[in-house]
Picture 1 (cartoon, rainbow, N blue to C red):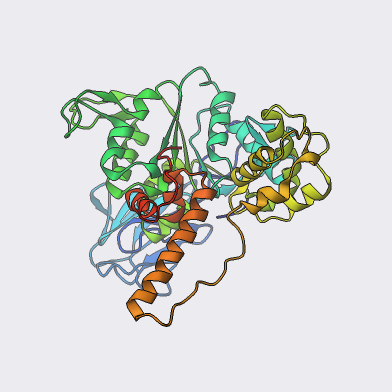
Picture 2: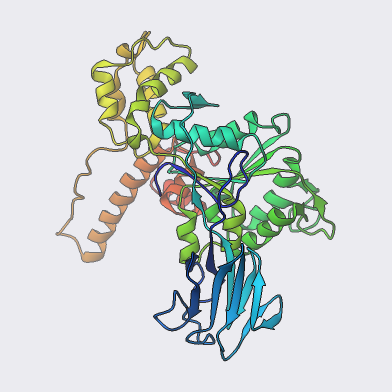
Length: 450
């Protein structure tokens, strides 16, 4: 995951004007995700290793085509290729095309599209944005971007590690913008089974599938006039990505089992704890959907990268619990600052909640028994698993595996506050499989949802 900040794919924020930088990207084919920037010199595309954009498509020629910038548009020239270059279904020899043009080369599709540009703004003077709290420069730079984005309807992709506050950022964008009187609908795509995600997003009609006893409006329809927040977007399958792309492009949705489409008016905020641009390069996420959703891409920094925010966050957490925090300093703060916080702000909240629970009568931060609360955290140094050499290989191996599973699951569920869906996402396990493991090892019963 990249560091905190924002990138922008179009000139879509108010008051932001910049030269449009583009690139040639393979959006479908053997080399999907590979690209080359379009600058002053032409970009040569082909299978020759000396080309600027090298293809492995066996139907492409060694030097297949060139793309260059000319008077604000892009000139595509076929370099005498064997199978030709197609644009809008017709073979071209030399043609001027706009940004967004898609070219077919052999079995590959190339697109001329904007390069994400680093967006640099003066840090916000605010120390909070919605429920996000931060005095660090990194967070105030993020606040500046979110404040500007809230003025319009620009589509935003929020990235960041688990627990950094992606949904809080989405809610703040909604509540600070012109759609604040409309609904805010959050969908955790990672928590939904594959068989239900289309119904949850797009709705269904009665009888569309087994168990569909009544018509149901999907999340997009429920968010009409407001904002839809699509969390853990990287977990959806290719077929759902294709349907989602159409909805994002046309702002029309067709429920599962229906022949009728419905126009929708929504602002889209998407989120992922993974770097979706890397998923695109790996071929697991559609490039065209990525560029539709990441018009403005914001990355929330992990807590370990902004330790100066720990004190104000702790003070805010205590105030929300009805306590007057007093000075947040001393050995207790040193203990918090020295922790690595793999669970970020969510983990910090858990530590403070445990400390409050274990410190009856505490009226200020200095009265909290933080050392005891950390004893319950899932981050002790792991001890080596005992190996029984007096048992047959298979029995000894099974005992080690059972011990590993129990320790891993116990720490995972503690870190995720007993939330089975969140634990499944963090462990990259199927939720049903995780539930079965929890039951097999007799661990405390946990919930399914967020």
